[in-house]
Length: 225
Image 1 (cartoon, rainbow, N blue to C red):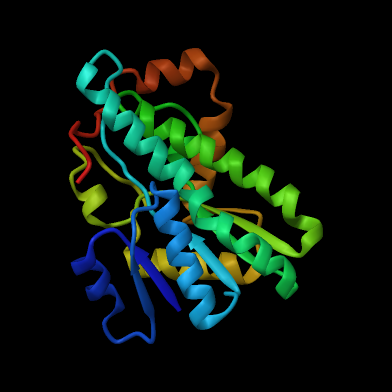
Image 2: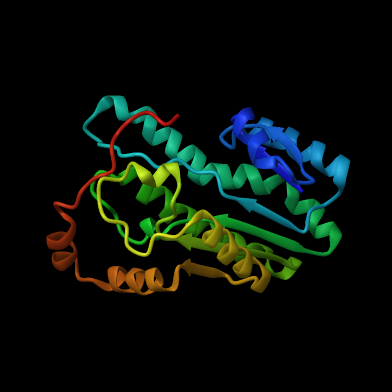
């Protein structure tokens, strides 16, 4: 197993007790991710599964000039981070006879949420990117799995000033993500209750959606840490 993270202390804590190689890198840095992938390939060979799960979630407002850097950070991590994570492994997987690339999108990418333009847009882009990648790699026996979670109980969501229905523990989410990878499901929304919510939201007429969500509580703004 190889684990990549940008915070050495959190990375070490996560790897404790696991037979894992660790690499300190930021998914926004293509060169750093390539170096980590090269080191892993040389040490352990081609992986069967690569998971792109890094992401930034923070409130943003377009009229706030200070939020421009936050928009860029969110897009770089949530969209280009997937590209940087997967790119080094596609050729080795192809030569190895296949594999699985799993990207984590979000139910938040189904419709735009007020105060969350960067996050909603980034997750919508991630889902479309993963769909395109799935079609590109299907004939090469490389499966692309998109998992779109609802709310997961992590420090990222604990700051949300609103109700979070069907919130899962991190352990439950990990188990369901593992099942989706095992099945090589093209797209899975977890939990199943949130899948139905996503379907309803997707097809709500614009006037109805606007009336419901225009004054919805917003995620706090701030620079990602």
